Amino acid sequence: MGLTETDLLLYIIGICFFLLPIALVAGDKRAMGQSKNMWLLATLFLSWLGWLVYISTVQAEEEKKKEQQRRADKKAAEEGKRRAAKLKQQATAKANKK
Image 1 (cartoon, rainbow, N blue to C red):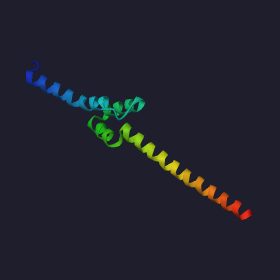
Image 2 (image 1 turned 180 degrees about the horizontal axis):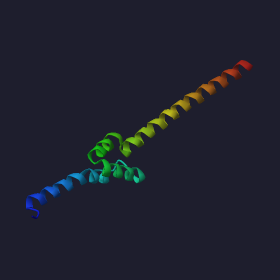
Image 3 (image 1 turned 120 degrees about the vertical axis):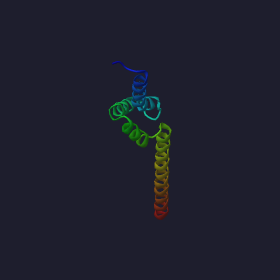
Image 4 (image 1 turned 90 degrees about the vertical axis):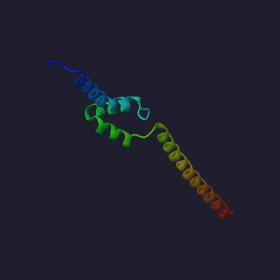
């Protein structure tokens, strides 16, 4: 009673089906470093569920950089408005002194 070719083929397909989400996370460039290691472990233990959570939660590095740039631009604009208001207030105070 040995393995038939069909059994062997089914085992190989099953193993590939199990390893596919791990390969997808390993090849993806959205996560890096320790974050990627954590996602690889999650995918190893949770298989397709881990991969689905990974795909739905991890932002691309480009998106992160754009979001950080947007926040920095917004902060700079607010700072510029504050400075302009302060200068205007100082100018008004000097004009009132004269």
